[in-house]
Image 1 (spheres, helix red, strand yellow):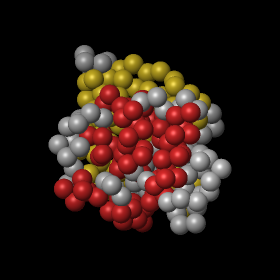
Image 2: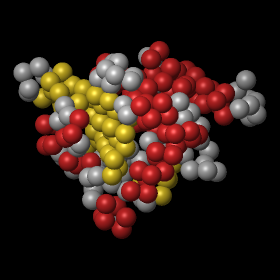
Image 3: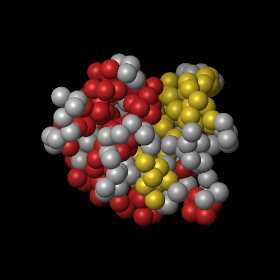
Length: 230
Protein backbone atom coordinates (compact mmCIF):
# COMPACT_ATOMS: atom_id res chain seq x y z
CA UNK A 1 0.00 0.00 0.00
CA UNK A 2 3.01 2.29 0.34
CA UNK A 3 2.79 3.61 -3.22
CA UNK A 4 -0.80 4.64 -2.50
CA UNK A 5 -0.95 8.27 -1.44
CA UNK A 6 -4.69 8.33 -0.75
CA UNK A 7 -6.47 7.08 2.35
CA UNK A 8 -7.45 8.72 5.58
CA UNK A 9 -5.09 10.42 8.00
CA UNK A 10 -5.32 7.59 10.53
CA UNK A 11 -4.21 5.13 7.82
CA UNK A 12 -1.27 7.35 6.97
CA UNK A 13 -0.44 7.69 10.66
CA UNK A 14 -0.44 3.88 10.92
CA UNK A 15 1.80 3.63 7.83
CA UNK A 16 4.24 6.09 9.44
CA UNK A 17 4.41 3.88 12.56
CA UNK A 18 4.82 0.70 10.45
CA UNK A 19 7.69 2.33 8.58
CA UNK A 20 9.43 3.17 11.87
CA UNK A 21 9.01 -0.50 12.86
CA UNK A 22 10.50 -1.66 9.56
CA UNK A 23 13.50 0.63 10.05
CA UNK A 24 14.02 -0.88 13.50
CA UNK A 25 13.32 2.41 15.33
CA UNK A 26 10.36 0.88 17.20
CA UNK A 27 10.47 -2.62 18.66
CA UNK A 28 7.97 -2.10 21.49
CA UNK A 29 4.32 -3.09 20.98
CA UNK A 30 3.25 -0.50 23.55
CA UNK A 31 4.99 2.31 21.64
CA UNK A 32 3.40 1.14 18.37
CA UNK A 33 0.01 1.17 20.10
CA UNK A 34 0.34 4.69 21.53
CA UNK A 35 1.76 6.20 18.32
CA UNK A 36 -1.09 4.65 16.34
CA UNK A 37 -3.61 6.00 18.88
CA UNK A 38 -2.33 9.61 18.89
CA UNK A 39 -2.55 10.95 15.33
CA UNK A 40 0.48 13.14 14.64
CA UNK A 41 -1.48 15.22 12.07
CA UNK A 42 -3.47 16.82 14.93
CA UNK A 43 -0.23 18.19 16.40
CA UNK A 44 1.50 19.80 13.41
CA UNK A 45 0.59 23.14 11.80
CA UNK A 46 -2.02 23.04 9.02
CA UNK A 47 -0.53 22.41 5.62
CA UNK A 48 2.54 20.65 7.08
CA UNK A 49 3.28 17.11 5.82
CA UNK A 50 2.40 15.45 9.12
CA UNK A 51 3.76 11.96 8.53
CA UNK A 52 7.18 12.79 7.08
CA UNK A 53 10.03 11.66 9.33
CA UNK A 54 11.54 15.07 10.00
CA UNK A 55 11.13 17.87 12.55
CA UNK A 56 8.64 20.64 11.71
CA UNK A 57 8.64 24.33 12.65
CA UNK A 58 5.67 25.21 14.88
CA UNK A 59 6.31 28.96 15.22
CA UNK A 60 8.01 30.92 18.04
CA UNK A 61 11.40 29.43 17.02
CA UNK A 62 10.19 26.04 18.26
CA UNK A 63 9.82 22.69 16.49
CA UNK A 64 7.99 19.40 16.84
CA UNK A 65 10.53 16.56 16.80
CA UNK A 66 10.68 14.01 13.98
CA UNK A 67 8.57 10.86 14.52
CA UNK A 68 11.70 8.71 14.94
CA UNK A 69 12.83 10.92 17.86
CA UNK A 70 9.42 10.68 19.52
CA UNK A 71 9.54 6.90 19.06
CA UNK A 72 13.07 6.74 20.51
CA UNK A 73 12.09 8.78 23.58
CA UNK A 74 8.88 6.81 24.17
CA UNK A 75 10.82 3.58 23.97
CA UNK A 76 13.53 4.81 26.37
CA UNK A 77 10.82 5.87 28.86
CA UNK A 78 8.40 2.98 28.36
CA UNK A 79 9.12 1.25 31.69
CA UNK A 80 8.53 4.59 33.45
CA UNK A 81 5.22 5.25 31.70
CA UNK A 82 3.27 2.37 33.24
CA UNK A 83 -0.36 2.91 34.32
CA UNK A 84 -0.54 5.08 37.44
CA UNK A 85 2.89 6.67 36.99
CA UNK A 86 3.70 10.41 36.80
CA UNK A 87 5.31 11.89 33.67
CA UNK A 88 6.64 15.38 32.96
CA UNK A 89 7.12 16.74 29.43
CA UNK A 90 9.31 19.87 29.34
CA UNK A 91 9.00 22.06 26.26
CA UNK A 92 5.73 20.34 25.41
CA UNK A 93 5.22 22.41 22.25
CA UNK A 94 2.18 21.20 20.30
CA UNK A 95 1.33 18.63 23.00
CA UNK A 96 2.03 15.46 21.01
CA UNK A 97 4.32 13.67 23.45
CA UNK A 98 2.31 14.84 26.47
CA UNK A 99 -0.75 13.21 24.85
CA UNK A 100 1.26 10.00 24.32
CA UNK A 101 2.39 10.02 27.96
CA UNK A 102 -1.19 10.52 29.22
CA UNK A 103 -2.37 7.60 27.08
CA UNK A 104 0.33 5.35 28.55
CA UNK A 105 -0.01 6.32 32.25
CA UNK A 106 -3.82 6.16 32.09
CA UNK A 107 -6.47 7.89 34.21
CA UNK A 108 -4.80 6.91 37.51
CA UNK A 109 -1.50 8.41 36.38
CA UNK A 110 -0.50 12.00 35.70
CA UNK A 111 0.98 13.62 32.57
CA UNK A 112 2.14 17.23 32.82
CA UNK A 113 3.30 19.39 29.93
CA UNK A 114 5.28 22.58 30.63
CA UNK A 115 5.79 25.08 27.81
CA UNK A 116 7.00 28.68 28.21
CA UNK A 117 5.24 30.10 25.14
CA UNK A 118 1.63 30.76 26.29
CA UNK A 119 0.30 30.67 22.71
CA UNK A 120 1.70 27.15 22.29
CA UNK A 121 0.13 26.09 25.59
CA UNK A 122 -3.28 27.30 24.35
CA UNK A 123 -2.97 25.69 20.91
CA UNK A 124 -1.61 22.42 22.37
CA UNK A 125 -4.70 22.12 24.60
CA UNK A 126 -6.89 22.53 21.49
CA UNK A 127 -4.83 19.86 19.70
CA UNK A 128 -5.22 17.44 22.62
CA UNK A 129 -8.99 18.09 22.73
CA UNK A 130 -9.24 16.79 19.13
CA UNK A 131 -7.11 13.72 19.84
CA UNK A 132 -7.53 10.37 21.57
CA UNK A 133 -6.08 12.05 24.71
CA UNK A 134 -9.12 14.34 25.10
CA UNK A 135 -10.51 12.18 27.89
CA UNK A 136 -7.48 12.41 30.28
CA UNK A 137 -7.41 16.18 29.61
CA UNK A 138 -11.07 16.44 30.62
CA UNK A 139 -10.59 14.05 33.54
CA UNK A 140 -7.60 16.01 34.89
CA UNK A 141 -4.89 13.35 34.58
CA UNK A 142 -3.37 15.39 31.71
CA UNK A 143 -2.59 19.11 31.98
CA UNK A 144 -0.41 21.64 30.18
CA UNK A 145 1.03 24.68 31.95
CA UNK A 146 2.87 27.85 30.95
CA UNK A 147 6.17 28.00 32.80
CA UNK A 148 9.96 27.81 32.64
CA UNK A 149 10.64 24.12 32.08
CA UNK A 150 14.13 24.43 33.56
CA UNK A 151 12.38 24.64 36.94
CA UNK A 152 10.31 21.51 36.29
CA UNK A 153 6.82 21.39 37.80
CA UNK A 154 7.15 20.71 41.54
CA UNK A 155 3.40 20.42 42.19
CA UNK A 156 3.13 16.82 40.90
CA UNK A 157 6.70 15.71 41.62
CA UNK A 158 8.34 13.32 41.96
CA UNK A 159 8.11 11.96 38.40
CA UNK A 160 8.73 8.44 37.13
CA UNK A 161 9.48 9.84 33.66
CA UNK A 162 10.78 13.24 32.53
CA UNK A 163 11.24 14.15 28.88
CA UNK A 164 12.93 17.37 27.81
CA UNK A 165 12.28 18.51 24.24
CA UNK A 166 15.03 21.14 24.01
CA UNK A 167 18.79 21.01 24.55
CA UNK A 168 20.21 22.20 27.87
CA UNK A 169 23.87 23.25 28.24
CA UNK A 170 23.82 21.00 31.32
CA UNK A 171 21.09 19.04 33.09
CA UNK A 172 19.00 21.44 35.24
CA UNK A 173 19.26 20.46 38.92
CA UNK A 174 15.51 20.98 39.62
CA UNK A 175 14.74 18.24 37.07
CA UNK A 176 17.13 15.81 38.76
CA UNK A 177 15.55 16.73 42.12
CA UNK A 178 12.04 16.08 40.76
CA UNK A 179 12.95 12.64 39.39
CA UNK A 180 11.67 9.81 41.58
CA UNK A 181 14.18 7.16 42.74
CA UNK A 182 13.77 4.48 40.06
CA UNK A 183 12.77 7.21 37.60
CA UNK A 184 14.29 8.09 34.23
CA UNK A 185 14.83 11.36 32.38
CA UNK A 186 15.61 11.70 28.67
CA UNK A 187 17.22 15.07 27.83
CA UNK A 188 19.33 16.46 24.98
CA UNK A 189 22.47 18.06 26.43
CA UNK A 190 25.01 20.33 24.75
CA UNK A 191 25.24 23.54 22.75
CA UNK A 192 26.42 23.02 19.16
CA UNK A 193 27.01 19.27 19.54
CA UNK A 194 24.33 17.54 21.55
CA UNK A 195 23.76 14.09 22.98
CA UNK A 196 20.45 12.59 23.98
CA UNK A 197 21.25 11.62 27.57
CA UNK A 198 19.45 9.03 29.64
CA UNK A 199 19.46 9.91 33.33
CA UNK A 200 18.48 7.16 35.74
CA UNK A 201 17.94 7.95 39.42
CA UNK A 202 18.87 4.87 41.41
CA UNK A 203 16.86 3.76 44.43
CA UNK A 204 19.56 5.15 46.76
CA UNK A 205 19.12 8.58 45.10
CA UNK A 206 22.40 8.46 43.14
CA UNK A 207 22.25 9.26 39.43
CA UNK A 208 23.64 7.36 36.42
CA UNK A 209 23.91 9.09 33.05
CA UNK A 210 24.59 7.59 29.62
CA UNK A 211 24.53 8.99 26.10
CA UNK A 212 22.05 7.35 23.74
CA UNK A 213 22.71 9.13 20.44
CA UNK A 214 23.84 12.42 18.86
CA UNK A 215 20.93 14.83 18.25
CA UNK A 216 20.04 18.37 17.15
CA UNK A 217 17.41 20.17 19.26
CA UNK A 218 16.50 23.82 19.73
CA UNK A 219 18.02 25.26 22.95
CA UNK A 220 16.28 25.03 26.33
CA UNK A 221 16.34 28.71 27.19
CA UNK A 222 14.28 31.61 28.49
CA UNK A 223 11.10 32.62 26.68
CA UNK A 224 12.65 35.98 25.66
CA UNK A 225 15.82 34.41 24.29
CA UNK A 226 13.79 31.88 22.34
CA UNK A 227 11.52 34.49 20.79
CA UNK A 228 14.58 36.54 19.78
CA UNK A 229 16.13 33.42 18.28
CA UNK A 230 19.26 33.03 20.39
